[in-house]
Image (cartoon, rainbow, N blue to C red; front, top):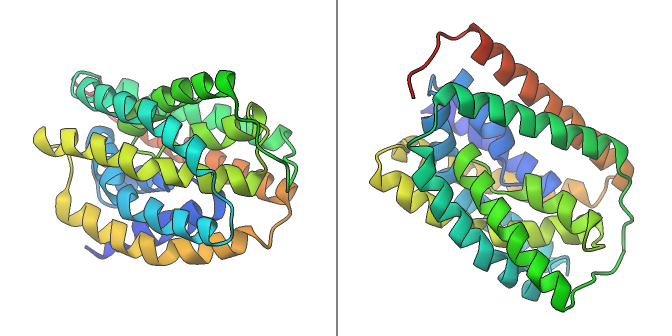
Length: 253
């Protein structure tokens, strides 16, 4: 159980610092430390993200860095995407899922290293943006279910790049969406028997405690520095998972 607690502490701090669910670190660590395969690691990580994202969102919202209306619209698409992704998760090869996760981490790392967010930027949200928010929610929900992440890996870059949100506002808004999105995917995973419930709860509780510290640190970092650090974390996670997957025996679907 101590391994799940360690995973939760690391993932929770990351969640608060970068506005992600923490699954980008928790899922690979669950594979490494808890000896779970990628499918079970994704499902267990998603369970832990529910309380983690709630704690992180409250930390940002308390400082006025959350767009509630936009979060509500994204959630509509996110719930549907998470439900569909959780059903597809049972039919996807574990090895294919792991390599897809590696590709997602690498792509996000490249974007983060090149993009310089503007702190204090406003938020553009009209009719066209609302339609785009639903689409973002669908992609966020699918990523949440497939990779055991809260979806912030998708939402934070999109909110800054396409909606004009500042880095802090993007993180707070993304965390608001994660809890219901992760909850829907987790219900489907529990019915399928994919999640390690005790381990997921232990990781989630420890992550909740750590997420407040991460959120506080986020307000102290310069936007550019924060993005570069985020890219470094993503690269480390991608390399670790790629090494583990390359050395593993071919898995059955």
